[in-house]
Image 1 (cartoon, rainbow, N blue to C red):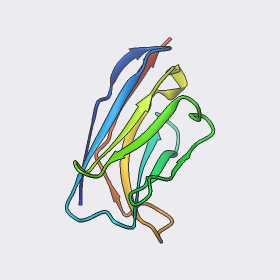
Image 2: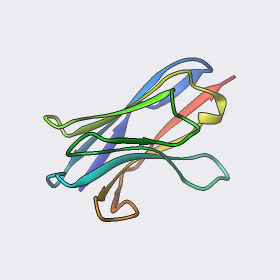
Image 3: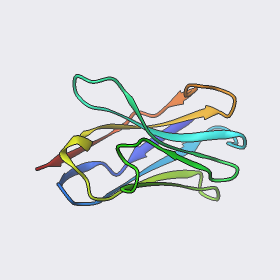
Image 4: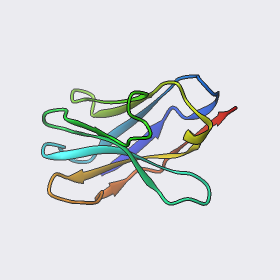
Length: 118
């Protein structure tokens, strides 16, 4: 499985940014696609995920109402629309995939940096 994340950058607080993850290497039926992030000096944390089959979503409390995850089954992509960004959202964002029955991701992408200035 290959996961290629893109869309990161430097923005100001209150701005929006859209991350995209291109997934390849297998069919993703019965898989869950997700985004995680890791800030300097902190552990990697869950941001959001979406089931490939039905598009059911989950979000971390810290991003609920601001971030939206979506998937495009035709193009095998998973996007993360991030609105009203805060300096606390500064982190490296990673795309990840897990089998539906797995508790942790089975595959990780290389990440894309998001920096939000105040």
